[in-house]
Length: 372
Image (cartoon, rainbow, N blue to C red; front, side, top):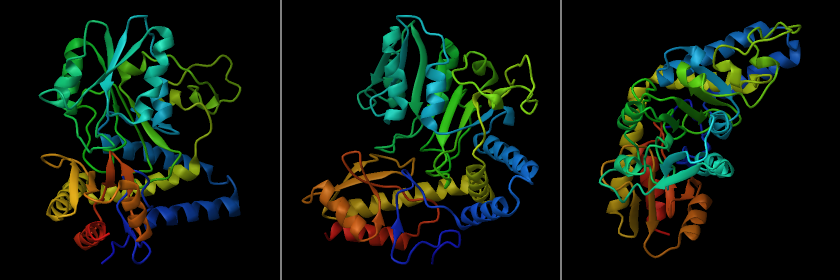
């Protein structure tokens, strides 16, 4: 039986939440209601829209356990936030940044672009050390300014021990930056437990939100170390004092929001987060990991399939596999043609079920993959 918030087309099985997720019913309804209000009243109720923006910041604060909603900026996407950090910090020639060789381009390109300033980007082989974290630590030296890592790797589902990395960074006065796009909405997340300086994520994956709106967390101390690289009316301290001459930078994370907010996306993401928070992230994490573990078992039991990741204990919602006799592109097209929505990633087919996916759906998806 379908979850009432996800009335997907009959016969369609959605296992691609690590890419772009479908919207819940409540999100669709929130966008329709906002559009109708805008059509009939224009900005007459803008004060209520600002209240929704405030609500979204508080929801995001709860989701990541930030000390304050003042630590939350609403940004366009993960890449924008990563660029704020990369070009907000003051670098010296000879500085280095430590990351991994498994990062999505969003968490690689901004740092590599700093080579023109004499900053090196070091990519640890997470599979070559006793633990992935040890692989990162082995590349750290006295010129390491920042460790930047994805909380969960997009192509393998590898979940890092963020608390351990954060403690390592704190003890050595190294900044800690986390691309959390494959965690938020799927597993519990705690910026304080991780001693995180910077955290960023888009809303369109496990959070069930629209593209074009994401979250950027900065700790108060780290925030003051970033020079601003974008400027506009919205990042002033007195945002709605349009004759503000001279003006001051907003004291909170809103300083990273230089222009008008995306009110449509704000209404949508707030509605999506209400589903996650109402359900409870502890329950969602248990279901997401349980679904991924069930998929892993089905794949291992399928004579024609070979599991690529995760190897060992399942800790995320990502499972990657391949067929023993059919090439990946052919298998991918076959699955898509049968309305099994997935991705071609990590050297195989990536399934990424969310909490609402049923075991019957996963059984059917694996059966179609086996019997191509």
